Length: 280
Image (cartoon, rainbow, N blue to C red; front, side):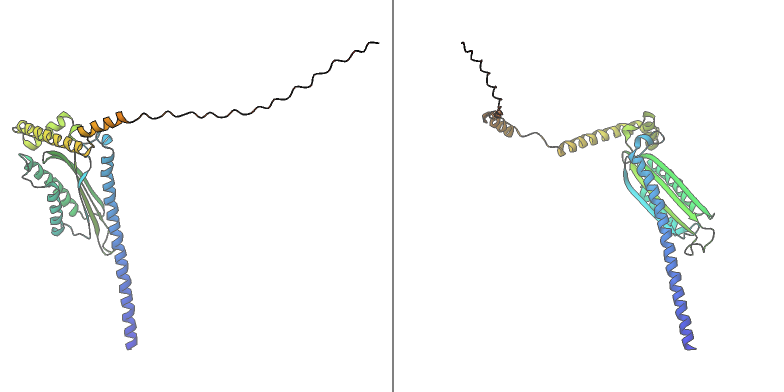
């Protein structure tokens, strides 16, 4: 009887181990699926960086990434407060302090509400299948024009027992990039600066921003000149010129005359002797 119980326990442990291994494999599959979706989102954004000219015909593109934030969750609960709190921290870190700028605080606060609403909608979604949100925001921050791309994805299974005993997988990516302000249209710059500073303060802020950009432009030019090799100092240049004047001219290169090939002419044939005439 004891042997039978031990054998049953061994079989149960083996079954539990196999079940555990199967669950781990399924979880690894879900993580791979989430990362695959995040890689797809990242490739879409990087395509914008590689071909901004084509993208500029449809929207204002960023130049290259300044900051990435990406993550995933497996088996989140609907309206999970812990998950929502963690994502709100990501949003706060991406958009920054809401009291930035003259009127920028209300702008950033509005953007955060939009992203927060999108997150809340997806976190509360319990319909089977795929849910997705993609948004981008262009605004003034730290005296530059930046763009933030937000991409969120969730997949709900029809029931809990399909993969690893979980109900869903969820992932997100946030990308911050800087916009080339020289490529913007006049009206676009006016809109963005007015949105940031407010109608009453936009002129004063534009003058302040212009001065900041001029100073940064001068500094950028200096850094470029510093990294390039400069001209020789005057003393070294004069010494080099004197050395070139005193140096003997290079001797002309003599042309080697190839000996003519010996031509052997055929000897002329012996002249035929005139017949000797013998008179009788």
